[in-house]
Image (tube, rainbow, N blue to C red; front, side):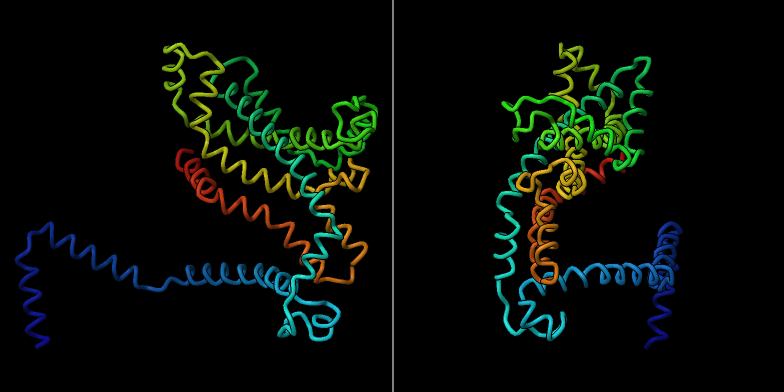
Length: 322
């Protein structure tokens, strides 16, 4: 039976035209190559799985123990033992002790304006450097990008003295200090200054992929510089802005250094300082600290999940055009 089938298959293939026969042979060779197990692919997948497990174990352990009582459950039984009781007491205590309702508001006061100003100013600079030819456009773009190469900690002392001696009216200040030091406005300015270089670099590379004929056509139709920017170029950069907005929100939200050194009043500090308060007062209660860390991490996770589609499309679109 097998011989008959084999002979019939050979006969049917012999009657095929040369083009179809060649396609059949190529398809079979591709199938054989695809069915082979490649050692490098196995090693790569094994490495990725191990890395994922290495990241997920501490995160999962922290979230798991945040629902347990430290003194009566985790400390005597261990962090991986079965729970005696799951409770939300750690989350309630972390929210109240860390004053998270206030620190979340402080963080929003800093992050939202800083994010908006950074993306807007970076888009304007990238638009000017990529759409118009002038003598110092490349130098100007390199200057903005080079600002990210200097560590922020190196500039702490001169910036501290600058804000300390910079008069600031109490009428437009969130704290009555008489100067910029100790105000959330100072933290916003620092974030905008340090983040605008990276955003300008990314947006300028993305805008270079937009054909200049679009701007020229808009100019022929009577669009000026600002109209061409806001109504023509800026809508086309929405994927890149979404990707940058997700990254910048994460970086600005997670900042601990500038909020700690420039805001000398504890009730004015952002949410990341709440974990420092808990570490000082309740440093031995690791479950309470884990609950606070989970609460602090939730906004960045929510923002990423909401903007996930735009974030991935922005990265993919930039890569395919680059």
